[in-house]
Amino acid sequence: MTGAPAFRLTDSTLRDGSHAVSHQFTAEQVRGVVGALDAAGVPVIEVTHGDGMGGSSFTYGFSHTPETDLVRIAVETATRAKIAVLFVPGIGVKDDLRRAAELGVSIARIATHCTEADIAVQHLALTKELGMEAVGFLMMAHMVEPDALVEQAKVMEAAGADCVYVVDSAGAMTVDAFKRRVAAVKAGVDVEVGVHAHNNLSLAVANSLGALAEGADQIDGCTTGLGAGAGNCPTEVLVATCDKSGIATGVDTFAMMDAAQAQVRPLRPEMGVIDADGLMLGYAGVYGSFLLHAKRASERYGVPTRDILAELGRRGMVGGQEDMIIDVALGLRRDRETAGAPA
Image: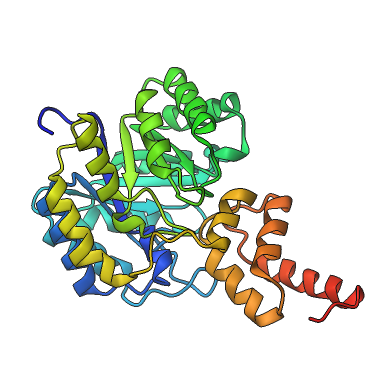
């Protein structure tokens, strides 16, 4: 589809997809994926550890290759695309943002829980001072009503954000719920509004298109859906669907399909299958990156992953509370033992 793009597409395969490969991206894989996405016309490519800059740690999982090396390679490889990084205050520090700017990063996406926008104020301001585009990222947006989300978006806008994102980190929102939040934020701020959808309920493409109908300016995808939990909005599917719908993306549909098949599909061939655990994430409203940690806890402590995820959802656990997964698993095992069930 020709014409001016209806939205700006960001492909997060090399950031959110890091969760799906246990943060083991290699330099060669980044070079190949960036080269293919750049050739297809994807305008923004995000590259960091799955939990953002500074995420390589015992808590979140160690990277195979230092993220600064991967970011540098991405910047050197891209001929047209802008390179973005994710930054979570408390995981990353200000020097990480400074280093990103030195490496040639164009966009820093500053992510907080949907009720904690105030902790991003200084980092959004620093991003602008460093000459990068500043994006505010309101994660787990399903956990608050639209009016409350608008107030948080305004905090990010006042801090200098060029765009504020409605982020369905748990893939928990129905189309109506997603649209209501996007419409409210769009009406409540004067900056651009973006969306980031996960596919745990198999609604990521539908939610993204619904958001576009409500005026969304930026949309995220991951090639083949490679991402946390059951994955993200598949970039190649979104582009092809837009093409068939007469919605211009600025991306070559067939080149995008080729990038998916040749560069990303081999990294995790089963990606895109929504299994029981992935579905449970969306049903219980649990942060997508918790899935691998919950599966490991299930194996270690002998309790079903589903039970762990259900309890995490009941408690309202959010990103940054990964250590609670072990506590939940241990508590469930004690409950089973007390009830006389086999551990």
